[in-house]
Length: 121
Image (tube, rainbow, N blue to C red; front, side):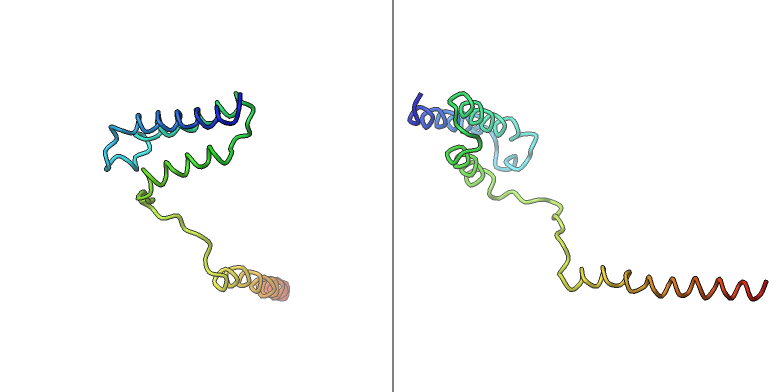
């Protein structure tokens, strides 16, 4: 089978995805339980035919359809709970250095207290 056949088949995968998405309302577009089946069908179809026609997966054409699905249907979806990233570098540095600087102080304190305890005994 040729590259042209793969292009035609991936278009059919896309057309089937669009068909499955036809009854999904705007308010349901970001609900995974609603869109997981059509999305999985698209991904599965693209992967199946790539494998069947000895193409690598993921490939540029398959990725184009996945990106197209996000651009057309899911571009307004955001996470309800934001994902927190790393703190700024200066805060991160302070969080790392502060405990390290405390270690010599705490070791000194423990040694000093243990010597003081021996003197009283």
